[in-house]
Image 1 (cartoon, rainbow, N blue to C red):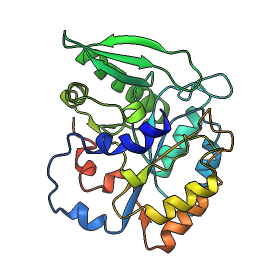
Image 2 (cartoon, one colour):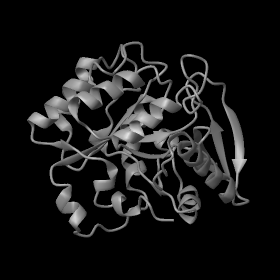
Image 3 (cartoon, rainbow, N blue to C red):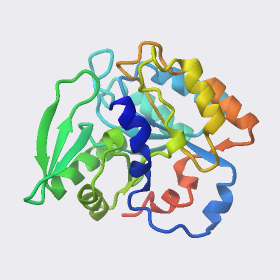
Length: 264
């Protein structure tokens, strides 16, 4: 994702398909809440993220794809299964990020969709999927999560790079999946170049702009970021937002997404 797309594209990714909000008991529970979410990545900072979340008593939400790791494996392989089991036992929420980190590129005239399968430093591969094929991308991550943890994944997903189309969202919805993007001020910038967007600047921006109700986006490791965002920004961010009166909630407490998490 380019920095320009990252900064400007988030609102569309978050807003597609939500419809009207209604006042519910979940909204009452969400008072003062922000929703910290992590997408998989190279997993290099995953142990540090887990430690900070535990130290700060924060329950987050994770979106899982089978991405290449620094060790040469994959984020959902057997080596990482104990890490995911531990996070599930801690009570975090989990959703799909597609199995192959499938980034939407185009809707085709024949009703199918073209995706770029690429994560980290992988060479890109392009595939054409119909509605069923895309649903299988979402389901495969859910099946692997259940095999690793013994728990069911929620029916929430995040499209890689936040790229969606109405056809893609309809294909996911037909299989029972609801898309979760991120809010404009929730883009924390950990995937940006650390030379042009140093950690101190990203932290200051987030502390200034994050507001109640924001869905925050970070990753478990970004290949192109030389100065890792976590834990340098994560812990002071959690503490700073709490000092502003905000609290961290899992997506099951979100007034819209919470009601859609476990639908068949």
